[in-house]
Image 1 (tube, each protein chain N blue to C red):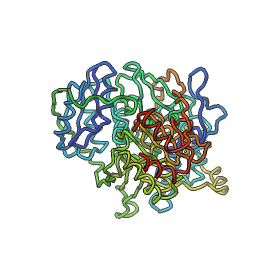
Image 2: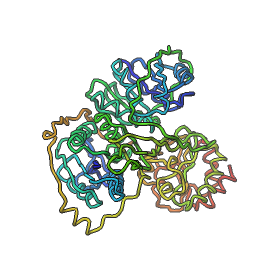
Image 3: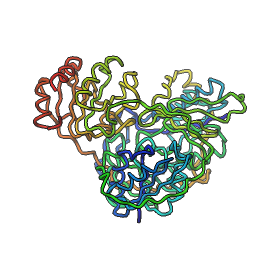
Image 4: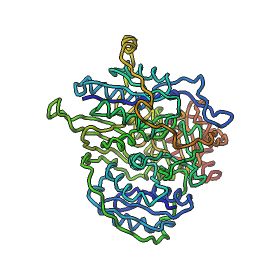
Length: 256
Length: 310
């Protein structure tokens, strides 16, 4: 069984972004870029499934600018076998990415597609669910545990059990394969990539397509009119002790 | 122009997030209908009909809808989608799970987590963990939206008298099934609905200390308990208590952050709280920059003192 993993190149988790002065967007020039953290968890999960012998090949896919090749190399350093870049300089929105992934699903016929639940730049939380709908697959989003049912033998895996993070607790679903899974934080802890693996990743196969090659129209559906800084909270005060704090809460803020 | 709100419910009652979503739907300036898709959900449908501003409730009932499986609920929404210009879900775990399936099947982009309606096709939404607010315009005929509940007031749960119409439940997708649910039992208010939240960070040091220090304060204030991602990752608190960019987004009347440094991802989840109190022994902790009242102190002495003083 093949697994397709989608990885997105985003502004690094630790960077505090700045809004551009013309309000056209956020300034990402000369900012450190990394793999979306949830996607790293997705790659790790796919590689672990391969290490367990459940999966035969892990294919990492990224959609975007040429530099996404670096993101794919990171995925391959974690353990993905090969990479596919769908290269475009156009702005890609989740629906367009889902359509590109659907075209690759048709081509590669994976048993599982694993994606991060959300990208930390646009915070959309859409692509996995959209892909599942377009490919007519079942979905298990916000996964904290994935178990592929291997009872029928390694060549007859047709089900997986997935535990999901939902409001107020956990939920377990049984889904038939092929299926889409999106990862939540507690699914696993991605390994550190080692230098030998980074070197090995450089030699792995990486194919590049254009959206046109896949017959997908990626034009954006949602226009960004402006981007502004959020309203700032006015700076508060420091209180010297608990008694003052209680007094302020009772008599000034009237919060208790 | 008509808006459809997909109700969040437990078959017996309507969840609070539905009420905020109704307010967002009403801001489109058109009629608001509510879909209650569930099993034996007559009581929830009746409650939805009471919500002020709702003109019609569509009640789809069947065993296939009981567990809220994304495939089946999306199919149910799609069965009636042609009647609507706006389809709104609360941005809860359930809403986020289903909405993109509906959008993709309709071949429209989705606008996630809106915090403001500027016009029926233009919305504001936070990006980059709330470090920027984008104003976006949808060019699609149908707007599929998830609503950040803290951005909108709750509609009154009574005062409405909508007609309840029944719809046939769609058939099962056959591709997924519900196995079980582990619900965290708690007598405390739900995190996203609580008026007061006391939240603990990594400084608590262990799961035992987290409970020992935070529980009495929560009990005293009748508060919900939250946690930073650092505390959750360290195993001090359950994942569903996580407040932040990737956890719950909250905006209570009072938020008390204890031993939380205030990473931007955490601030993203709570900075719209009305009053913020920070207790931290690090004077440089970023949490102080958003706190109305900052107390620079060791939480292990300050929190018990606070409990005693309340």
